[in-house]
Image 1 (cartoon, rainbow, N blue to C red):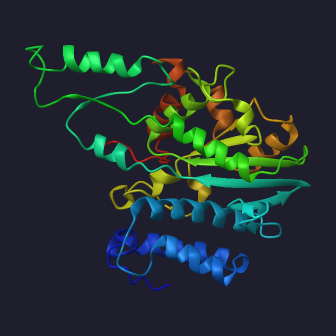
Image 2: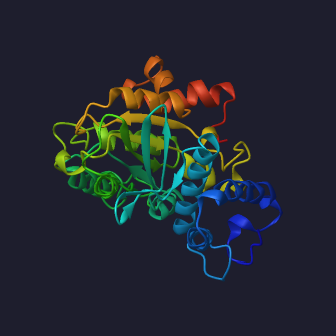
Image 3: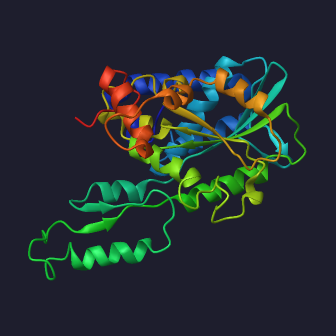
Length: 327
C-alpha cells in the first residue's frame, strides 16, 4: 500500500514501518470480504492519500479495521463486513460460530478534549457515575480551594479543571447501535457494541457510565433503558489506547491484532432476551479478561477501582503490557 498523505503521521516516518506493515496485513485479510466501494471508503477513512488529516476520524477507522480484520482472520468462513442487520442500516461486521450469529458495532469516542486537558499543568476533578450537583461542587472547589485570590496556599499556576465526562457519549453509542440491530432477533443472535477506550482510568470510567450512579445499565439509569435494549453486550477495549500516539508507546506491539488488546465483556441487564448461552459463547471466543477481573482480589485500595488495580497489579506489575506504563 502506498501512503501519499504527508500529514498522516501515523503512516509516515521510519518509526511507522512495523505499524504500517501491520495495517497492510490487516487490509489484505479484509480484502476478500470487501467490495471495491468499501475498500475505497476504508482507505479514505484511513486518509492514506490527499493532504488533509483528521486524527479522530483516522483512529475510528483504525479501531474498526483492527477489530474487523482480526475477526475475519479468526472466522473466515462466516465473517461479513458491514452486514445489513436492519436494511438499509448495517453494523461494522458480523460472524457466526456454532449456530450463533454475532453482530458487532464499533464506536470510538473523540478524545481530543481529554488529551488537551491531560496536557495542562492542572489538577483534575472527575466523577465516577452521574452526580446531580457535580458542576456546582467543582465550581465551589475551584473558587474556594484552588483560586489563589481566595486561598493563599493555592498554586496560581495550577488550577482545578473538570475532566471530560462521556456518559452521554455512551448513551449516544447505545442508541445508535440499538437502532441498527433488528428487533426480531432470537436467542441465537447476539448484538454487541464495542467501545474503544483510552488509558486504564478511562476504562474504569466507562464501566461506571454503565454501572455507577444513574448508570445506563442500572434501574436508576438517567435515560430509559428500553431505548437501547437491542444491545445485548458491551465490550470495553483499549484498542484506541494502542493506536493513539503509538510511536511513544514502545511496550505495545501488534497494534492491528484485536487479540492483543485489553478487553472486558459486560452484558446489558436490560436486554430484551436472556441470551446467556450466546453471551458465554462470545466470552469464550473473544480473548478478554472478564473472568480474571471477577476473580481478582483488591488488597491495596478500593474495590470500586478494581479495573485499575487489576491492570496495574496483574498486568503491568507482571510485565504484561496491554497498556503502556506511565514511566
